[in-house]
Length: 273
Image (cartoon, rainbow, N blue to C red):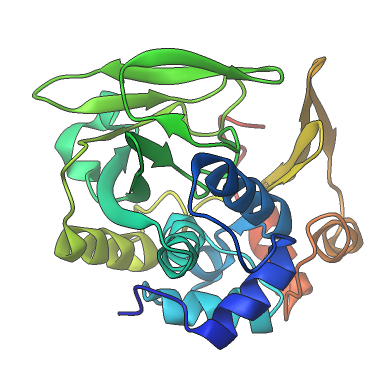
């Protein structure tokens, strides 16, 4: 598995996210990396939704996201970000987390890759939740805010910590432990999410991207925009609507939008619509 981008890869990555190639590995530069990353790449689950191939290795994420004009989910978004941070001189640990463990328990552990970065103190860095705030936060219990977002870390059960997402987040929370790294469990859950009929990503079409002052998303048939004023929604009604959004605001090169829309159209209406 690729754990650190090569110098050539790092040059291309930094150019894509708009962060200078050289600089001290401090918290200010860490914040610039995270913000640049989530503004440059779209969080998306097209591979799982459509049954297209997907790999957990950050090397594959680099090819897909840098060369292929695609985005990725947590394994790819945080995988690529972590490999870039390692190349920039940061000490990065890939942590094994569980989205919605608060409701579903330990069965979901491994369905989320998040990152710990150790500087003067440990920091939680997450570019892979899709609509989570776009900056590092101290890896400690406490409340935080960013622009119009309120979020934080709280104690959960059995030594777990719980990241609480902003109020309009598609995922309300994920649990993690500061020292729990488990690559086999991450790989097992990635495989399950890709293949099992019960996977939420086989049954929901979701894309999300950060912009200055707003977060844009599509959940199945619904366009969502979150700003300081709240959340607005708009129904999508055709493959042309979807193609315009994916290729436009989300910057994705999707090979068969008509097939994606046909599958979206066949979905029953869900909790986010």
